[in-house]
Length: 257
Image (tube, rainbow, N blue to C red; front, side):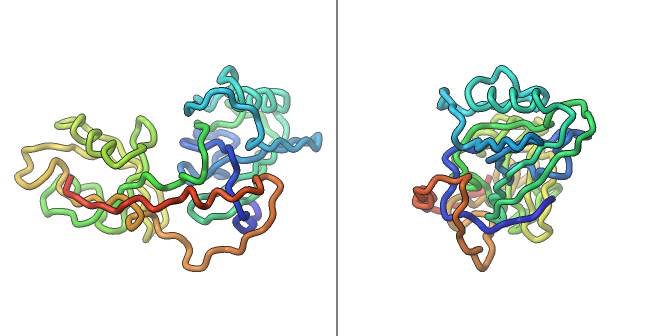
């Protein structure tokens, strides 16, 4: 996936959060969904584009279909222009990984692909990376959760409709899928893998809650960080003003879902 460098002393002011990677796309095998943030792109011409400085006039999150990235406006529109101008050429990607807290450089192949980059993206601030995750705690025997979830090692990152943004979002999502299939993207910290699972919330399974497991949320239930943080370095892709203070601890909570 390219060569990694240590975590810079501050986060980029703007990044493109990678939500999905299309099969057989230029980014397949280079980008890790949900953990990776695209912060820079370079071309064979030697142009280096810092995505954290691209003008983005809309403060709301934007998602793209990963095919053309054109017409989204602001920073995504500029990225789409760069990709179109370099279609079929090798493109360098500068990526921040929230899990490892490192920046790495990768490059796409030069062969034409069905899409220009093959990513579904949203504009956001990486300082908030991995705050809204839902830690699977005790799983009750015979519950819907027992079929799909692993206690203590699993973390729910998102569902098929996209990321979740608050503690109540997950419970509201479950309530809205009673007796319906619910597709979730789940990370397991023991195996270090991301998988898609299907839950069937129901009141008919015979126990407490709709899926029958405890869910933890907040500072004490974040995905484990490296035991030894990598040393900080100066990096031109990042602003000099540290945003680490924005990672303020959310009060931890746990309840049965």
